[in-house]
Image (cartoon, rainbow, N blue to C red):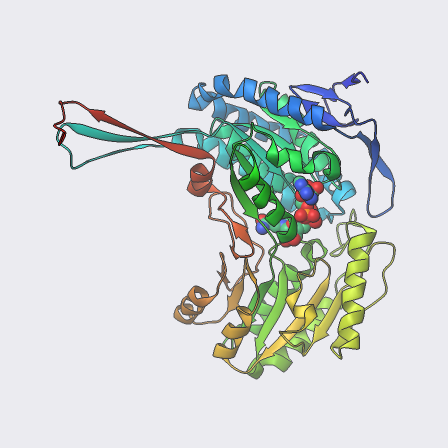
Length: 494
Ligand code: NAD
């Protein structure tokens, strides 16, 4: 099959792949409709890649990378500064794709646009930050130098929930640090998770081959994406189940490779007895219902001290009742559609199971299409299936804690540890409490959903391996090469 070639300058007719700077169809012979989860309309017909397409993408990346790694740091920085201008010029188009393709509310889509833009700005600062070290060494006449150099080709696999940001969170720093990239977006978000970004970087003048987008069926290209000998690092963001598989494949591959695994969460938001209850309520509502709860850092469990429990619960329910649900394009909508039928059915099954198990369901409502109105359960057992599941939907649950020690014990009663939050008026207490939470990130008096491009991001336990942003991503997306230099002849024992 020959490839259809198109060049979507303004990114309106994406059809499949972006490989070696060419917009073209995939060679699998199969097509997949990219649909709007709110109204079911078809946004694009994506022709899927086969393994040959994937191989070509990796080869194109490898061929382009070494010249890119030799460019001056400022040349790489400038690509990102131009990309920011493209982001600004095309803001409404980008926000619109995020609303239509991933069911983002207008608010969330604007937040995601800002996150991508911020990530590009941070990336513009990275090229001169890949510093090595010269160290003293206890051997006469010797110098020890540790160089920091690009890895080569980085493979990126991203999810659908913040598709553009979570792809760009890996793509931008990888490119800035002199690597080339092949990205496989989620099949729910082939445009905002990959093709749209490629068109932005193309317009910003990124040379061909450095960023390649492969949209393919996981059954066909999934394992090969990690097993392929060219990528040196697989940056995966998604579920813990798939992340484990990626990790296994990376260790099994003929050419061993590094992995970054950013996986699922079950974030607790703890309200201590001295908290500003009103502020805690607002944070819990926003941190739970933003993007319909489909965020790895979403507030999955609200753990409230018994002394403020009734007050908190009453105000929380009242606030949730004010939230509007429905068309994500309307500025006033707080809760839009779930990404697909399968995910919605999963949420409905959780609600039924919790009700059967006797949980108190105090705010509810039936789905309208894929829009599930906000749901609230109170007096929930922290060990119940509801509390122990990552609920990727607009379902809030409140757990009562006897005291601070009980709240801490329950916050840690989970096999994942990505984000968390604690509300208290006592700064010292908040810091002591935070450091005992088994998670990568804890926010005192703020929502659990936080990601700033220069601030460390990452999880503990089954939430994954690896770190993002700032100096942490410089360490991840470069390798260190030790070179020692013996200036005077060294005496050996024999
Ligand atoms: P998912 O694991 O189902 O899919 C993630 C990506 O992996 C998609 O691109 C998918 O096509 C791909 N994939 C699936 N099976 C694969 C295979 N066998 N080989 C190669 N690729 C494969 O996750 P999802 O449903 O898209 O996203 C939701 C999950 O992501 C949640 O668990 C959420 O917590 C997690 N997440 C984590 C973070 C984080 O930073 N820790 C951020 C966002 C989402």
